[in-house]
Length: 95
Image: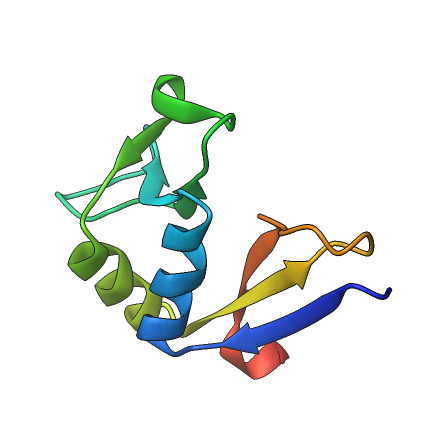
């Protein structure tokens, strides 16, 4: 079975995919400035976690996501058919 990759800017689709895998919207600590969220990411169980990431609200995450004109590239399933947590944030004009 081949892995399936999708790209979306749909907030509901992103949130659903992340939450189904136990993820939480986050930023990388130390990258924020002037009270604005820094580098966006998702914190999944077993990932980098609290030492390097700061959880933020979905509203703040999506506001920055849209301001930076980002798209969410993600893998639906791995080649073996299991759920994947692989994702990348890319510029919308690159997809």
